[in-house]
Length: 430
Image (cartoon, rainbow, N blue to C red):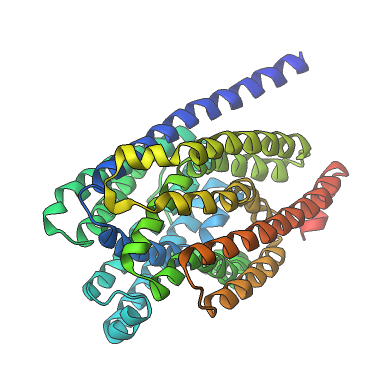
């Protein structure tokens, strides 16, 4: 009887993964189809500016709420999780207000640093983007906590459709503003959809007087995880910032296309597996359930999935570019054949890194991220003769550093799993 129940539970999980894969696959396919159209309307230079804008927003949104939103997943009672949700949104709003004031007084300096000299006013849309994007992530964490993985995927489909249609509608502007406005409206649609998905939850019953307690309770996320996450995201986009400062916006736009093509299968896997993996790890930790089977299945699945998809891209990249994009995007295949190797290791390691957050091994995350940041700073200070040379060296170092990160994750996993098996995890984490 116990064996039968275990099989049924496993079937339910696999069925969830299958449906989520379909939903996320639809979302990513929609994004890809819109890219096929948009990149034949907008120029590589437009996408170069948009790439810089997206890198800035992605880097800043990850720290806008002080990482407090991660506590939504680990709070034992949902009432407390909702308090953390609104605390996270409040912090994000304050962060964006401060950011707007900085842009107001230091616009020229900031635009000069990031090469946004022809479209300076675009940075005033960044605080709005950060608030909206942050709200999407915060609400999504509550959906994950409630195991509403399909709902989360549907939200992404709505966002992609809204974003793509809006970007096409704003094409007559013939500037990167059309791409940015489309992204903003896509996030707005995501937020409305998330509130609809959570309509049966009493979200608006919260007490700001309790926020101080939760701020103190989860201060580790602010003081340890926030700085390291900022540095990690800075490192994730350092190639974009390097090309922005050393090469032209047109070359950056072509690199952005190659990055998008490579990230298509990666994001498909990460967006499908990561929410379920994160929820299952959190649940296992709370209930003292061993993690060995979960980790083993993930490693095997992610390795073969990524290998098949990335090999497919490596073989057919020239065909994709010639068939679907105009001549202004020539050269992207050379970038694809280089960055695809670092994409493989990142695909496997990135979802697993959330495990260290769940067990609050934040110092390990910080140690690796600061080390990786130091490496990126060294690379940024070097002037390479071409983008190809820069990418080859950075990819090699990515493979080395992410392999080391995987080693650190597994070392923590073994320690935690042994303690769970001995039923002493609570003593360990305290």
